[in-house]
Image 1: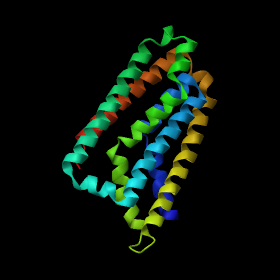
Image 2: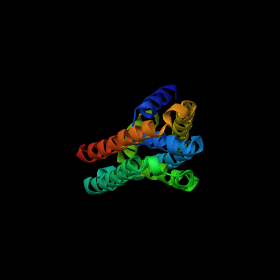
Image 3: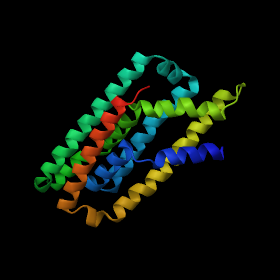
Length: 203
């Protein structure tokens, strides 16, 4: 259990689309937006974790075509998010408080986090390759798989809660119009990079 928890923590700490989206939303619309994005990401992880536990993801990864389709869909979504972020950076100085609140609505942030993770085949690959290492082939395999998935979700929520709180703590400086514009440009470029990497990586 502890070995799995350590591996999960390392994976969660690696910068990725989740972190980029949480940073962007927390800076643009405040701490609640960052936390809502985190909740969406956790829900997306739940999809992959549950599927892996029931063996569905293994079937998906066995099909090169299905895996590639999922990669392309996920990459397209990341590109769309990158474009939206770069556009937001361009109009940053003319954005009103009401528009910022609309972009930071709970449902919008949860949806962004959910799609970012649920359309990421690397998350499915992680659970399919890692879970079997900690599950024995007995009658309790499914129960243990779901338990480990729950542990991963707790680690995910704990780490990114601390991360969003940290971003919010320094928000006064980070939310300056020029600083926010720079961060959003960097975030947009990173999301594009993640999309390119997602498509270019082999199965």
